[in-house]
Length: 213
Image 1 (spheres, rainbow, N blue to C red):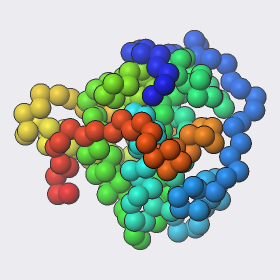
Image 2 (cartoon, one colour):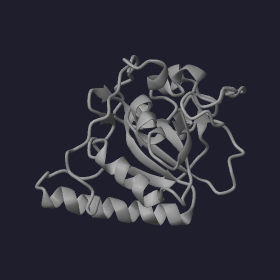
Image 3 (cartoon, one colour):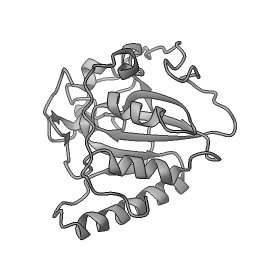
């Protein structure tokens, strides 16, 4: 995207930027789906969080799926509360650019979301994604339950086997952990590629399909 720290090492909590007192306020509806971007969501929905590099293209991938009722972009996995885009791009907050996906499990399951995650970015590149370099562009799955964590870890093993069988010679570097607080990004980043159809999209998969997809 437009700013890049190009830091290849995650900042530790002691050296991270201090917290901001004021959270970024989100009041708009989803630009595409016309649903709420903030809780409370419908009782029949679940929430998943994914980081796949630049969050603009990743969000568009998920809002396009049947059964996804809302998406939002934000900052997750780091230390600085209420971080801003400019701060995250310094690499000194510890956050990744992440997408919150609110979905109806009766229509689309978490397993299908995981398949879309693995197939639509490069999960072996460490602290970068394509031309976007820096810790904020790392691959990650932030899990909201033990069930999601177990499913995510299992899916990583399955996809690693697919990479090995294809002779890629690469190992998955995706961070898979319990979800920390999701801090909303600024309004201009929400559904960015719907508002700016010619905008930058850095998504690009490995070309290797998730087994069974």
